[in-house]
Image 1 (cartoon, helix red, strand yellow):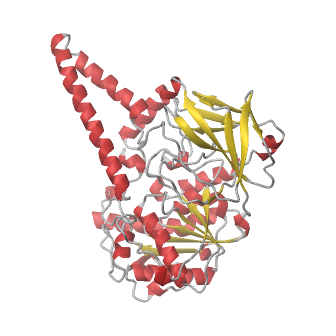
Image 2 (cartoon, helix red, strand yellow):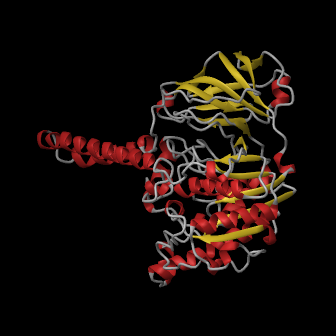
Image 3 (spheres, rainbow, N blue to C red):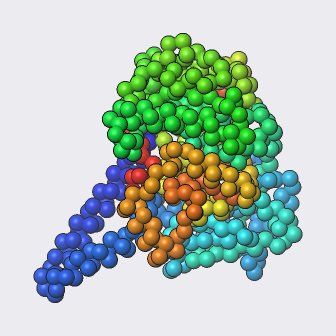
Length: 494
């Protein structure tokens, strides 16, 4: 996690503690002057209200505008809402990715319930109390839009009468040679199962074993180091086996075996080996025996940045991808995700084979742990962008119902997404279901079953303009890689 999100979390928790202390001090006189039993009753009611309406991690104001810029070749067509239908001035042509920029304003009930925008039979949710520019994903709605039948309405919110439709045209990247970079097992499935399961030529490379946070495996009678080693073996197996569910054979999957949360430290000292923080292992070859080809790191098995870059360079030259799917280095704050893309760019700069296009994904966010908001199976609106992002294209291919079910099944096979919810989170969900109308899918308890199994997948499209190695920026600068930050998934830090 980047230092910025660490600061946001600390500020959020500090404000929460101060509020709770102030509330408790205010309740003490009430108990002394009126009735003692009012204090525990009000505390319980306050906790219930917090869990129902104030437990989201939102590190910006719902009134802030999202700030997106689109590439010059994207169409920007004036649009308006007339009697609940969207009318666009101009022709969208062959554009397959459609983004509607419109102001969304929550009603009074939209401060208690998630504001919803219904686009035909699709639903996209936003922050409670929203009142700013937002970006709806209309991809897949071209036929209804051209016929003038596309209905858009708000529930617990209203939409401005005027809007702008951004129409972007991309090739079908599933027809190109693809390489998917997954910092951890499950990242490829979360971001791109729909894409890679229909790709004609795809390879998947997972960088780390995923061995940390193995407390669950200690219940098997294992000590902490043995539990971490078991978890690393299981997740490494996941990275090689689960893609077969999406039609990718094992000889197109590679596990590099580096260690979780060590990539930023490796980047800072490229020749120094960094073993696992929890398993005690220092040899990456322990999980490489099923790889379909030999790699530079196999020679000594040292977990160094130099070996990682050399491995990625060899994989680029072996698979010769035209398109690489990799984490968004500015939008996704996980330190391993940032480092993964930095390592890819460094490898490509030194490689005899250079891809043409990067498809960037974000499995985590700085500012909103619930994005994509709303239930599973619905569309993906653009995420919060309170700080300007690079001007990239967008590509948002659709997933039909059968593919969504297959994607949920692929996630259910991932060992890291199988853990039962702690009691606190189960209580929170029951309260939010009863009082706030939220719903979770039956396919799995982990929050990613709600967030990742959607009508769309979403990628930022960036030309792979690889600079020569001597011109590459220093990728281990503090602003990009925080080697001391501990990462927890959003639900675990709640």
